[in-house]
Length: 109
Image (tube, rainbow, N blue to C red; front, side, top):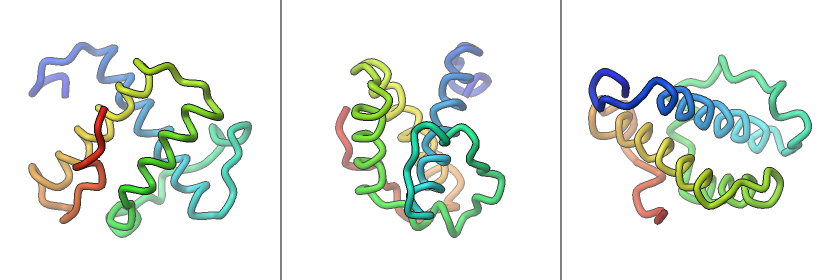
């Protein structure tokens, strides 16, 4: 992102943090318990392409609800998180063809 798109290091770091939070949320969701107090302790080092390929649009929408309701993210913070997810899944589907479906494709800002 920094090299190709020319984004600032702080923006790249913010995207990285956004993606980490999303993946931690998804691990909790798959385990059947979403706990905002414990989310930072969730390990995401075992996420693989199979896990990513199972992410659906509803998961993205549920995550947006979570960051609005439980984390009280502002509109600007939510927009950046959507942008982070869109860029990531666009990269995984369009640029590298590692995923066949982009779950963020029809999600509006």
